[in-house]
Length: 147
Length: 147
Image (tube, rainbow over the protein chains, first blue to last red):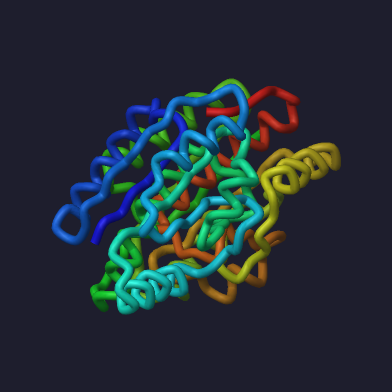
């Protein structure tokens, strides 16, 4: 399985860099995960274009979007499992910048996911997403997971 | 202003400890924040009793609860601001353990807050909560906040 996380901007806080590393390490044997960082642009439309250029045609696309659907971790895991059973092997998650995401990205996304009504920093969003992907693997494998 | 965060268990991951430190440092001049860690018990009822013993009578109590309300960061900030205007000076947030929270805690809470339909680890919840409290301060002071 291949997972791409396309994100605007770099992680700046040391503790977030460490957190991301930790989750990538934990998932190393389960999936190939690539983090694609795109530099901030002047407008979300420009950011959207740059992101679009980095997407693979055959990938399932999930856009992190405050106007998206808030689903449970179990439902999130089920999405993975159903798509995989249907032959999907590449999953791309897009995390916009501090000012949101472009309409063009909303149009091409297969799913729009909202983590919360609350606004999280886009840096923190990356960690929460990595944790949810890790959790989804654990759920789908029936492995215990609490810490 | 005084803020207490009562949580079951200790932060174990280094990156989470660093994250918590960072937010506490940022809020040092705004509020007195105390983190009260309570050891895990065999049942959530026992944990609930231990937590109840640590609550101050005059504090406003917010329970982090998957069955609570998911509000926006702006609504969360408004709660702080309204309560403060009404003379409230102490706020207590309760984060249960890996297995949930007791009904007794649900009964005494002034507000039950759900961060997401997704399940976050209770350790990660602490960081997200600290970030939301920090964000609320920023919103209420009209200060810019993006990173």
